[in-house]
Length: 334
Ligand code: HPA
Ligand code: ZN
Image (cartoon, rainbow, N blue to C red; front, side):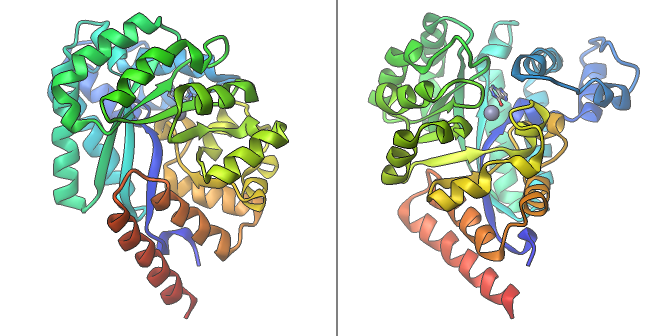
């Protein structure tokens, strides 16, 4: 059985990270913005990173061509269209409003285009979605509060808040107050932690931010007490194998900790993070890590079940998707 037979959810995807070079060129042209590369191939050739910050510099530069509501629509719709082919049934996607509002693009423009595409994607591909607003952690907490204020009229379209960008030197505790405000507003909470930052940042995400999910979480494996806590709470980790390889979080996929996470009883899931930059969508991540770690059919079933169980869907919707995984698995096993 390969992963394509199994329905799945993607829980760690930055919409701006799904911006393929071809679409970047097309949108740059219609917005009359120059790109310092000759072709989509030249853009791809520039995607070689030795750490998170290397990547973020290029990622923010690419996002500069996104100006109009239609640009955000096209970006989002292209992602949904692509993952429909990977048998993705539900997505919980991040967007980074500050990357756009600081360039003078209105919050309404960004969320307008994204939410219109999510609606059309559900109608066209049957993919349901939740939207997660990420605060940029390299900026002050006051800026996150200003962004949260801009989001207020749209909270019916936003399921949760997250924390992304440069991890080292920007611990979760820096955002304690704005996460408390988001929690008071009834939003779900997630945070990138333990991608490059130490286990202590994962503790802070749990104890200070009180997150519902940890994004990445790789470095939890350095701390047995933390592993025990994550297992005991059934905390979902949104793991991103190809991202980890491209950002040198691991040197080789064969050394990736995913299999160990499953053996320890951690609720790991497979995700693509920034597929246009890291060499593959969620299906490519499943294929590459299955191959590198010789994952079993049971592992694949566990991973896809974890993706629905760890989502922010209702219990009824989760049960329906989990039953669909079982049905697909038994069908494939025949
Ligand atoms: N880590 C932190 N910030 C990000 C990432 C990531 O993997 N992708 C996009 N923003
Ligand atoms: Zn990420």
